[in-house]
Each structure stands twice: as structure tokens, then as C-alpha cells.
Length: 404
Image (cartoon, rainbow, N blue to C red; front, side):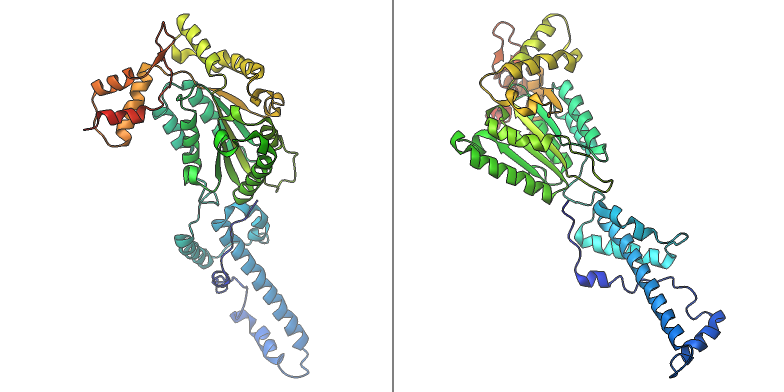
């Protein structure tokens, strides 16, 4: 793992005047020793060699204590690799940091972090705001109770696992406009301070970044290099692949080794924590068919579960012939941890999307305007007119028609 850069030498030198709890230096009860130290300066003194040894011993003690102060200070500022310094920080049995030294460390740490930016995670680029993610999924994502629960539970569990043995692979499936990209953006915004602009996040769009099949070998090298560089730069990374169904099979196979379980290593070994997101329209039609069938059978939308959707979705992925995604090692070797279905959106969900679009721009709106925007969408199937064919896509653009 790439370590955080250490401060310049002048910062380290600030630790030199730390109060060291050296025992018995100049104590009243050591006047005899003090006399011997004075006699040690006399040529041929019997105490000269003994005095030199005592000086060396006390210098070693001072050096050891300074190293312990440094370990304590650096553990506060760079906790990501603190385990390697715990033994030094602990000191011998019974050793504890004196009060004055503790106060000095507090002042120095506060001062350093005031302009360097220290974080609990050890990397200020990483926020891992799971509470914010939960709130966003609940308040801003409409009509996707299955995806809300699956994404939150899976991501939270992965982030709370001390040493995950593999990268987390999530595959989002559903019609366009149902919220796949929206959730990907929520993850980036809540896990990283700079969201999609973070150095730890990389987004690839199949038709934009890998448009020509004849260059697949060059794409494979570039993709592999990009993944490794990002992992070296950050100890927690997020890779998003939009239009995953259009990725060349060769590119999908390149990703396989990054999602395979890792062999256990020593207890101090740390692997970068990595999440792979695949966004795809594959399976959208079968998801819609299952949902429509359940609704006609008397089920309410909120009663639909993952167990009712997952078998149909995976079967659809495997039998699809116009995409290599379902035939890749990612699917065949079960390297993707979860296939998340996004349900088709209804009229009421489109209204909520329109409301959010107005609110996000600080614009006033009426219920009549929300209804009018929702009615502008095309609904299918032809008989039921139940699902928006574009989900909430283009809703934000449609509110321009109602601005003064």
C-alpha cells in the first residue's frame, strides 16, 4: 500500500525537545554519582570507563524514548500503517507517557494537522460516510427498495470487514433511467471526499473509452495499467464500468484476476480495498416482465423481493448472445458478488424525480407542474401504460419548459 508522505526534516526535529522521562538525572540522592561523573574527566580516573558506559546507556535510553514519541505522534497523524509502530510505541512494561510529553504531543499533532489535513481513515480522500449513503438511498432513490437494501447492506459489510479476501463486485441491471448511474454516483460521493473526481475513483464508459474492437489489446494494457496505478495511489478504490454489456470479452477477462479471492498472507499484510461496479441494461426486459407479472397477480411493488428476481436475471444474462458479459469468467466463476436488479419506474416515481429536480435547483413548483412533467413521459406496456420507458431520464431537462 502506498504510504502517506512523511513531513520534512524540520517537522521531525520538532520532536527533539520532547520532555524525556529520564530517571534520576541530577537527583539529590545521586550526589555520589555526580561526583563520580566529575572525577571521570580526570585523566586516568578509575571512573572514566564506567562514566562513558553510563553516558552511552543514557543516550540509548533517550534515543529509544524519542522513537516512542515519534511512533505515538505518527500513529495519530498516519493511522493507516500504525500497526508497524505499535511495538515501539508501547515501550517496556510499565512505561507510560508523562503528562508533559502527552500535552506536547497534543499540541504538535493539532498544529501539524491544521495545515496538513489529518483524517481518522489516514487518507483524507476517503470519507466512507455510510450514514450519508443510507440517507441518500432512502430519500433520493425512488422506487428501488430492492436495490436500496442490497447496496447498503453489501457495501457496509464490505467496508466493515477488517481484511476482505477479495474485491467487491456489484453488477447493476435494469432499464435506462432507473437509477443505476445515480446509485454509482451516490457511492462515489459518500465514500470519497471528491466523489467521481477523486483520485481513487475511475469511471469507464464502454463506447467512449473502448470504442474499437480492433484495438482491444491496447485497451487491455491501458486498463490493467490504470487499475494498478489507482490501487497503488489509494488503499481504497472504486472502479465503475458503464455500459458493461458493450465491453469486449477480452477486457472483461482482464478484470477477472482483480476480483478473484486472494491467498491469506501475514497478519500485517494489507491489500487495497476495491469495489468494482458494472452498470448494464442487460436483463432489464426480464426484470420488467417479472415485476409486471407479480403486480398482475396481486403483489404490491414493495413486496417484491430479490429472491423472486435473481433467478430470472441470471438466466437471462447467461443466455444472452449479443453480449459477452454473461459468458465472461466474471459470471462463470462467480466473481461478481451481487447482481442488483433495478425495477421499472411508475408514474408516481417520475413525479418524485421531477420534484427533486426542481428542489436541487432551488426552483418553485406546483403539483400540477409535476403531473404535467410525468405525463410527458412514454409508458409501457401498451395496454397497461404502467412503466416509464425512460425511467426518470431526461426529467431534469423537461423542467426547463416550465421556467419563466
